[in-house]
Image (cartoon, rainbow, N blue to C red; front, side, top):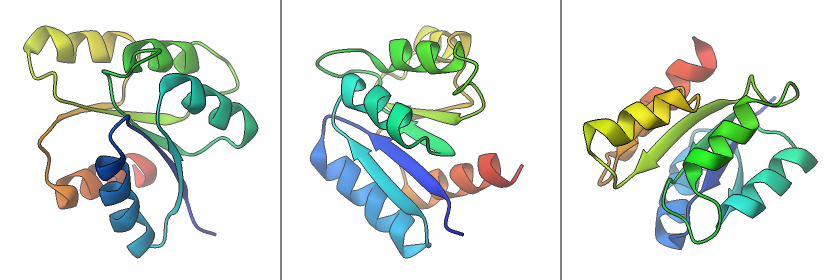
Length: 122
C-alpha cells in the first residue's frame, strides 16, 4: 500500500518538485495550492502526512496546522511546515500550533524526503 502525502504550497514549482521526488519513491501524492484546498482535501481523503507552506494567500499554514491538530479526526496526521520564514520565533510558532517538523526554504529534497520517512516510520 502506498503512503499518502498532501503537498500544500501556493508555488506550483515547489509542489511539482516535491511530488516528483515522492512519486519516484512510491508515495501517493495529493496537491493543494492554498489552505482552503488543503482542509477540503484532508476532509475528503486524509493523508498520513502533509508538507505545508506557511505563507499562502488565504489561510496561513499555521492556521491550517492548528485546525487539523485540534480536530480529533485529523490530529494524528503528521505535518511538516516548509517555509521561507526562518526566524526562531516563526519556528516556535510552528511547533506551538502542533507541527511535527519545521524546515526552511530553500530546502534540499533528499533531506525533506528523509524527514518524511522518519515521521511516517518513527
